[in-house]
Image (cartoon, rainbow, N blue to C red):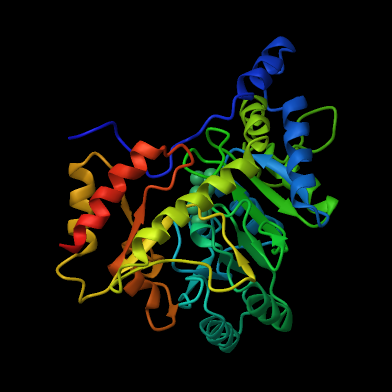
Length: 378
Ligand SMILES: *Cc1c(COP(=O)(O)O)cnc(C)c1O
């Protein structure tokens, strides 16, 4: 072991989080209500623009679950899901006893393939059931092919749930991620670009959806003098303490995006010298990634370098790396569900590795990483 541990994507304090937490204590709003929540939601609404209505929740997973509820996804309904993602994108489909139908990735953004999506829609229609939703992910911060996916969704009149858990700060054609879905979600888990220590938001395009989301997130309690319930609800509201952390973090978001993109440039300088290792990069000017994680794919003829031995070398040097997300259609949990595509995402999983991408990487850390990577050649 040499040097302190370098993490893949650790939390990075901004400086004023404690002030907002102190506010909550001073005013005794140590609850799921209070001014931090209001201010945090407002800050994100202003940041995203485009008539975004935000509900702060306990997690990104909760936000996806509520999105499914708002779209009335029920037992036996089809939901079209990007296979290449973290399991949290799809678990809520099972909470609703609905049926995920998995869609492959395309090679450009690694996200939902429009052709496979359309094949899957046709399959569902042949079964006599129109899919209730499309869950499209902007994985590793790279926006999905928004125009192509949206065109298909509109043509078949299927709403999009945009999973931008990893993509706060990313843009497509200048428009921010979090504004592309009928409903969108962002996560503030500890490993994301900014964090509330655990939390997420649901973004909707109208006040009615947001009111309904808040109602479902607070046990679906009807507005009466007594406790009155006619449908199932959840305890999904974010705490006012977490929202205080979020307020502090939002103040440094722009800086964090700049830093993540600097990390990407750092890796780009190294990997431009390698034919057999590719750094995953924006395909063209339409795509602006927050580069939440920098990822590489290692081709087969790479002088014996594999994701496994590269990971081992990093681990030996006390540096955390991770394999890419293992696609959902290859998970035992989802083994019985349909998959559309040519398994491109399975191949990416075989070849890929995520590299340290935190915003608190300092020069010394980068040098340790660089030493390992430039010595691979020989
Ligand atoms: C982190 C993440 C989620 C879930 O967010 P939580 O806040 O951890 O529940 C969902 N989808 C993707 C792609 C994620 O990376």
